[in-house]
Amino acid sequence: MTRLLKAVYTIWLRDVIRFYREKTRIVGMLGQPLLYLLIMGTGLSSSFRMSWGPGEVSYLEFMYPGIIGMSVLFTSVFSAISIVWDREFGFLREVLVAPVPRWTMAIGKALGGSTIAMLQASILILVAPFIGVKLGPVMILQLLGMLFLIAFSLTSLGITVASKMETMEGFQMIMNFLVMPLFFLSGAMFPLRNVPPWMETLMRADPLTYGVDALRHIMYAASPARDFLVQFPLGTDLMVVTAMSLFFITAGTLAFNRTE
Amino acid sequence: MNIIEVRQLHKTYKNLTAVEDVTFEVGEREIFGFLGPNGAGKSTTIKMLATLVRPTSGTAIIDGHDIVSQPNRVRQAIGLVFQETTLDERLTAAENLSFHGMLYNVEKRTLARRMAEVLEMVELSDRKDARVKTYSGGMKRRLEIARGLIHYPRVLFLDEPTVGLDPQTRNRIWTYIRELRDREKLTIFMTTHYMDEAEHCDRIAIIDHGRIVALDTPANLKKMVGGDLITLRTPFRKEVKRFVEEKFNLAVQEPGDYLLMEVAGGESFIPVLAGELGGRIHSISLHRPTLDDVFLKLTGRDIREESANGRGALRSHMRWRR
Ligand SMILES: Nc1ncnc2c1ncn2[C@@H]1O[C@H](COP(=O)(O)OP(=O)(O)OP(=O)(O)O)[C@@H](O)[C@H]1O
Ligand SMILES: [Mg+2]
Image 1 (cartoon, rainbow over the protein chains, first blue to last red):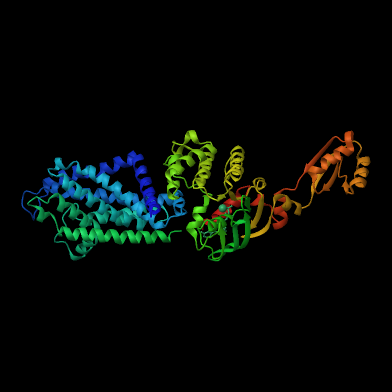
Image 2 (image 1 turned 45 degrees about the vertical axis):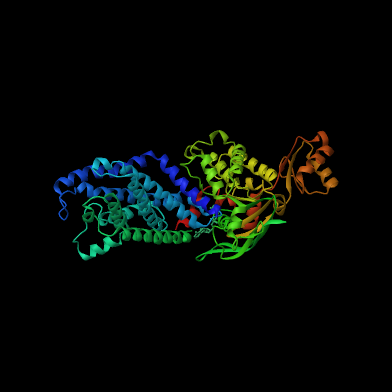
């Protein structure tokens, strides 16, 4: 048992150390959501009134949890895709010949990606006062837990995809046909209400939808506008994100067992 | 006792037979070499023994464990250095080693001691905190060998450990390998297509098109192609020729202004010859048959044509890519 935990920990530690070493990656991944927040948030809130809710909810408040969700999404998928690099540069081999079952690699990787994504997102939480969102310590803990869960499900999804990829060439495809749709369909940037049924279906299949919804639940728990900002009960969000985490980590582990 | 017992190991990829019914044993503390041209099936054999590739049929027992049914036990018992580097270049050497130790469940205090030991051996102690990215090719290779030893394996597999390295570094790596065998009671299984390198092995299997065509000590293999050739220069050719023919019952030829003879143990024959002939000779030289000669005799092809000039290598890699 300790042996397996040690293996998971090793994979996790390697990812975290490598992330910490890559300063440009940190800057890039932090800069992007901040930029979105600044440009789109301020730009759109002047021309965008939240038509269905009471007047006091600003667009910035609406999109802020969405931008955090976006940051989690990008970081998670990037971390998972690094498996393809590992395969190309051989390190994956070193892990695959170690006397540990392969699922430890999948779980270690998923935990590593989730940790990094959660850390990035938690820096975004620091700007909450500037958005006009008040967060208490309990709320922050709840947010961190939720962020970790969302990140875990998305990293696992990424691992499942990455284990099928032979080279980095497919990366652009993944960005265009997986990451961006996941982002836009999640309701992070604009509310997905009164949309055509096909879009509603896609939106409901997107794990990030529930993740972002849960973040809004937690952040605006005390706000009178809460019910206008969220779409599902918090319990549903939690259940769906947890179920998706389990589903994707299982799929990722199985996909991993089949490589090479 | 044999630490590696390979039984009818066989691997086919679609319609290509990479390894064909290979059977052999490796004794404890032996340096065993797999010699063959590109595409002969050397890496495939190593990968099967290291439990990375599943044999199509047959099996092998390593340190008492079956490679097919007990892969995790086999993995713990072996160290592995791949043909292509598998270091994490963005981490430091020390981190690469310690992650390896953790994956192989080496206890923390033992790990620290062991890391210092192996780094010392491959002379990288002072560079241990540098990123591997900044290492030269030879340093990387040495680090990989060190990493393969972290968990005290019983057998170390080295797939072309010295390919692409300068002669000095190659020699150094050979020094480590012998040191290891003596100090750690390690068995070493290595592949190469350098003939001169195969000479360092206790025994060699020559593999061609997936089949073992010969297996013996380098000296015995070379005996297959004939004895040592001794060239003798002397002002008294006729006299000396007659004397040697009568005294040692040897056929002596006179192809030019020198004498040529074929003997079984040239090395020990020279002092005898020199003692008998004393000051009457100018020089004696010895040409011993090489493994190149052996390969040529066994396969009808020159191994150097296939690998050393690189064209063969390229061809086989292109085949591989397709
Ligand atoms: N994954 C694979 N799929 C298909 N064919 C393969 C695969 N791996 C190896 N082969 C084929 O098996 C044969 C043996 O390859 P192998 O890599 O074992 O040769 P090698 O002796 O190590 O050669 P080299 O000196 O070039 O490393 C080659 O013909 C190669 O094309
Ligand atoms: Mg090879």
